[in-house]
Amino acid sequence: MQKKNILISAPTINEISFLTNKAKFCNDFHIIEKSNTSFYILVSGISSAITSFSLGKIFQKIKFDEAYQFGIAGSFNKKLAIGETVKIYSDTFADISFSNKKTPINKSNFEDFKNQPFSNGMLVPKTNFFENIKLSKANAITVNSVTTTKTQKEKWLKLYNPDIETMEGAAFYYCCMKENIPCVQIRTISNFVSDKKKDWEPKKAIGSLKTFVLNNFSI
Image 1 (cartoon, helix red, strand yellow):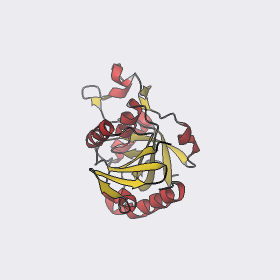
Image 2: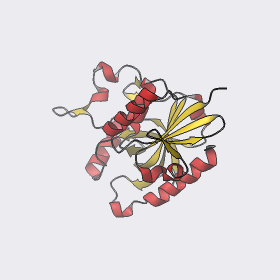
Image 3: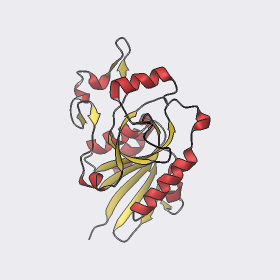
């Protein structure tokens, strides 16, 4: 029986060190070998551009059966507690726009954002194992700059009504869905959007993420 290849991606080493620490480094990859599965651990880098390059490079070399992105996130939704872990039901590139009209490009008539893998400008993974993960669903936006002002926060809420924001999620979904790889993005809340950085709790979030992953994945 052929082994499954599963990709686990995270933007930074801090978010995934609990897996890289027990992985073997071989041919540019951190790998955890199990009897029927090879887990490839990828630190993709921060931002959509760097994440897209990292994923494109690994997809050229390895065919994956499933892909997961783990990491922390900022929340627009006060009902999501710091340290709470959610699965991302939909994502989009929020801040790609036409400067003259401030029209989000995913709401424009450009074919790239109307055709698959987009659905009405959104990236919505449709996989059976997504539904089997016992977490609350959240809608996300992906931005190039972390939202730090009330004005920007209100803009995103008006345009997309998101629960969370990240800097890599939509890139992960786009790359995986273009390659027809079943994918799920799992994020743990580290802060509320527009809060001062001193109020962020990344260590608490990463601790909660670690607990969820190790309790729910046979890695």
